[in-house]
Amino acid sequence: MEIVKIDGLKKYYNMKNDVVKAVDGITLTIVKGKFVAIIGASGSGKTTLLNCIACLDVPTEGSIYLGDSNLCELDESR
Ligand SMILES: Nc1ncnc2c1ncn2[C@@H]1O[C@H](COP(=O)(O)OP(=O)(O)O)[C@@H](O)[C@H]1O
Ligand SMILES: [Mg+2]
Image (tube, rainbow, N blue to C red; front, side, top):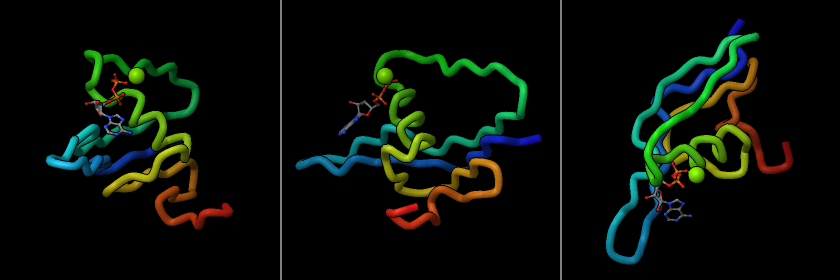
């Protein structure tokens, strides 16, 4: 059973003079009962990814399903 399903996730930050591509097209599925570690160099986008999964940040593009809910389609209150 899939509990987290991410497709084509991008998170870009528009800065004054450039665009920071913190997450640039991630696709991954996490199934129930699996232990998953996200590893990567400092600045590679781990925290940004987790913030998007946790609804603390809004993706620029792509979809995140937690169970049957597409987080990107929830309104602010939900
Ligand atoms: N709020 C933000 N505004 C602008 N750039 C950001 C912001 N948060 C993270 N970044 C940039 O996005 C990239 C990924 O950062 P981050 O997700 O914190 O990486 P990690 O957790 O893997 O170290 C870095 O280049 C970082 O500087
Ligand atoms: Mg981090």
